[in-house]
Length: 358
Image (cartoon, rainbow, N blue to C red; front, side):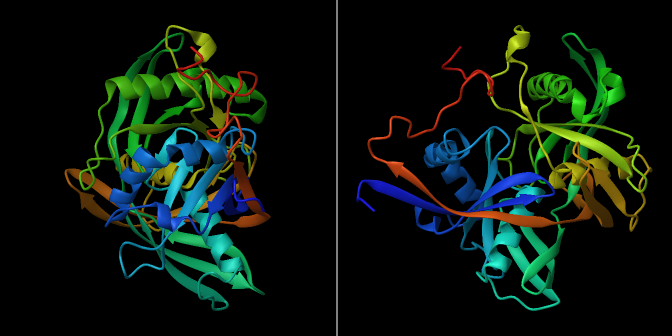
């Protein structure tokens, strides 16, 4: 291949429907003595790489990614930093499942059957992982996530068009604002995807403006990243259904045309942890009780609260999440030095408007 081509190796995986691009061999670009420092480094210096891989023509609005790094903590097997359309993130359950599936099934980490145990270094702490393996295939990934906690329960936000809506603000590896679909007056069905996205974009924007957050152990994690809209599920055996809205452009509350985003295809691991934390805080979910959370496309993650703890001033829970991943491609992505779109591009037929477009 010509020298003017930059090549990026990746394994594409989906976790219960959510597409994740697992980046390997990129660790020489990232600096920092801890994963939190590496997250900050990525935010400052590698955003062009994130945009290149997640935007068109190589990506699309629903795509996320996982950057696999050597661990900062020597007790871990590898480190992960998450790439989403809204920026780099400290943790993601679906992307962790994608990364673990890719590394186990390619033999990039030591594998034993029927169970492989791994430790993953993230910007919010170590995550212990159990992988059920059969014939080299990762049939199920279960991870003990970092502690989850509620920052606010039934906090009322005043939303344009939607009025007064009670929300929970929670941490499950990222900060979420979570609201009931019924309180927004929208059905929690795949056919209502555009309505869900619209409400989710407004919720996140208002929550970011009105509810300050900061992780007690990592003050650099100080933003409400995502919206979860939830409700009951009609599916037998499911404890509830949810839809997580991923931002894909600038939201101007005065301009409803900008109320856009993309739905997470999976049941969302970190969001499920935050949802369980809120339920436990209300006395509605005991420890050691399976919580089967359904996505908008009918796939499920199963969560369980193992114990309680404290994170700074917050009463917290120690959750596990279990789900499945499937490899879909082995790829070399290429950037030619003459390519006019080194950051990729977005277009308003699929994407929300960017600041530059506005």
